[in-house]
Image (cartoon, rainbow, N blue to C red):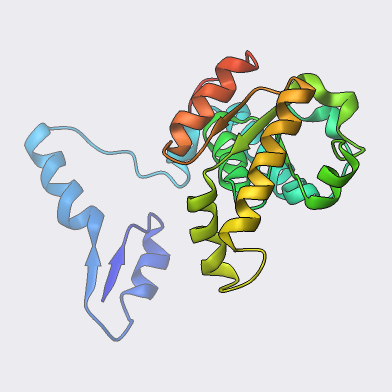
Length: 208
């Protein structure tokens, strides 16, 4: 079955030769509407893109690329360009929140995991202190964290409830000591988390 919204009549004619049921959506729906309304539609390739905010679109693409490049502490390059840096233990919701901020608000969000080595040193990852003013923390209940980690690494020390309790407690202690605002993602939607972050860091953005 072929459902076509092709504008170019020459190409449309070629596709009609396909071995299948051909449904021209313009002919099926638009032409009757033209007759009823007494108006002629404008069949123009790429017209839908002309009604969007081109600069906003580019901002979102740039922000998405930034979030992907700076996911899970992959690189410390260009952190000065970040609008926000999310920190928290592994699987506390940093990656989906970073991507949501990028896609919906054009916010450049990096994220860094807080790991046992950081807790042993009693310090944030070395790349972060110069950017502390734009750090926001995510935590999560140990029980929920254990459930999530067990889906990834069943019956591992990483996913054990005892280890999850130890990591979340250490992470929350570190964030309090460093003066980093944070929230628990346990029972909050990504939309709620993103709104809190935008308000906390005064990141005025228009949702796309």
